[in-house]
Length: 234
Image (cartoon, rainbow, N blue to C red; front, side, top):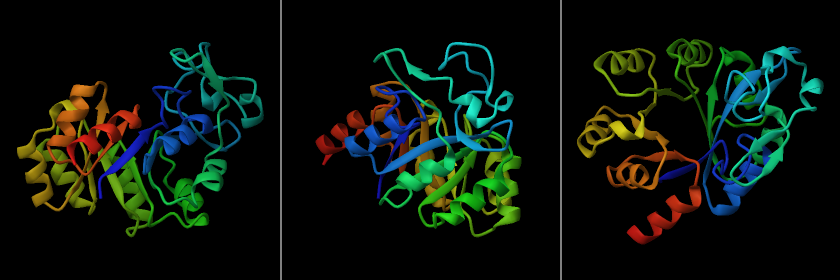
């Protein structure tokens, strides 16, 4: 099954990593959601990508500087659509969406393996979710804690060292940047037993190429366009 992961939700059209963005992605037909986990000053796990507020909130500060209650004064914005929404707790996200027939890619932006697994277990997410990171040590920690949890390694261009590292922990998913994907590489990675998910899909041409190369899934800001392309290819 090909997984259309709404990247931080349908983030082309709604404030990223907010409930409005996730819900829009589901309404568009995405069968997966990708999101990012960080920890607040008072230890609450929330969904937020950047280290600081500059890009999506428009002021100085970062998640770790504030308690969750204090974060409620801020709004995540989507400048393209002039919309905004609040920062959401990871647990609230799981409560509202975890029961749905969806796939979830949970990216660790900090070493939050233990807390993340605990919440995912609480909502019976093991068969639906994969834990990912650009930091190899973070997914390695997941496997050390719980070898039964699936992990994915987010990378730019795949190297022999990356393949060795992922194999060394029994990782399941390889996540290359879309511009480095070719059909030959995907075939080789499949031959090694990896599920392949492309990221960094910044435009329609990259989206088409990654899909045509045979990846198993894709994180995309505009899930509606990917779904339309998939329908045309059928």
